[in-house]
Image (cartoon, rainbow, N blue to C red):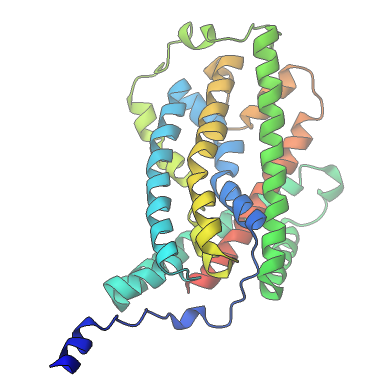
Length: 327
């Protein structure tokens, strides 16, 4: 009888994913924190926000806020599973444990196909952005794309620590650019310095059709692009399997995503809407370049092109890393 009770109360063995074998826990707190930031900031903000502002006006900040909340909830749920069992296979590994092989197969290949198409766009974007500078204009686009792919592939094959360092500095560039722009924008607002002959302020929103200048429908239509802009926020969960002390590092990194989204996405769009009328922006140019060029900063285009190039390289690097772990 006692043996039978022992069998019933015995704790089941923890699930072990064979895909986790061979990976070293080399990522530190600073790597993971910057990966969390870098995953939430990319070309969707630096470049895509211009066209979305032109389509939906200031209501873009509502779309970013609502989608950001859902993105946070998804990552928070992933974080709970990470603390249960850190795995480089992330949600595919958890799908295998709780839903079976079919669930893992579906999740893994859908994720791979998403990154495969995104990676093609990223590598093309890298070559296009590089051609912005005249010294590279004579180099064929395919050769620049091949060099970029070779660089990130080499980084991913050598060591996860090098991947973490590269993502750390990519994120530093992106965050620094946003912080500098927001400081400039706040200075322009406080001092009422004219931008393209227009005095900035909340009146630029209220006097140009309000928050919904084109109605509610355009805001709903751009949600697809906004969701795409939040791609890579799950990368912090993929990195958990190779992180030192994930039980301590992951909660801090994941919980900080919410305020970063609020500050960088929502804050940037609100600031852009108060610096220039929404119809001054276009899909052909980064909204940050639009503002900076109108206040007489000649190097704005080159600097922002470097930032967008960094964002594209970061996305390509993250895609290779995550799909390699997921599959």
